[in-house]
Length: 222
Image (cartoon, rainbow, N blue to C red; front, side, top):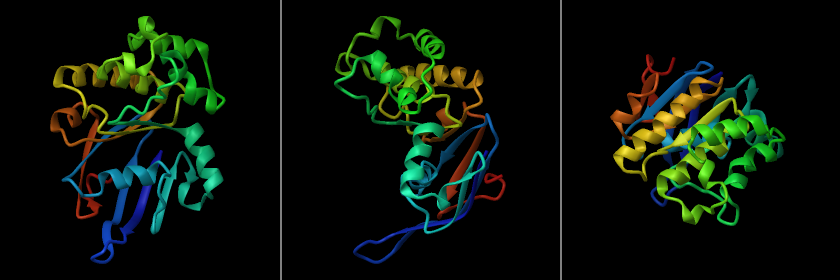
């Protein structure tokens, strides 16, 4: 469901062009979970942002669920992001002026896919029933990340993109949040692409890939 083919991405710097991705290839099947690893500056987050349509490739192609991101204009990309992907970052990015229940529903309503029954299931399984009337500032870090995961999954996206989603959490809370995420994914067709520096976290996903010098090894890119 995800095909990244020969993607190049370069950024201008004071010292000249910096090539971050150099012909990267990556393929994922529907329902698969993949941990993307690599040293700092290896291009992990850049690749994730390209797959999210937040940045443009210099050359190459990205196809998700049969749609070519590199051929979309900005309006098409914005609509695609609303309806086809979910995003979870290290920073929780909840809307401070909205209560938990409204944060949870925000993405699904924006995508025109709000499903009260699915929302109720997410609330129950993420342990958020007693927190729905609270605001983000009244929650712990682990609680906020559970809300962020629920918001990302509420629209039933084809692909969930996560950038160090447990990076701000202690080990025990990280394990709990990751377990909840993987259990929810097991009951949905959503695929997961996660950037992480933690071998322990990566080992919980169905496949791992390491990005080095702007490319993924042939066996990892399948």
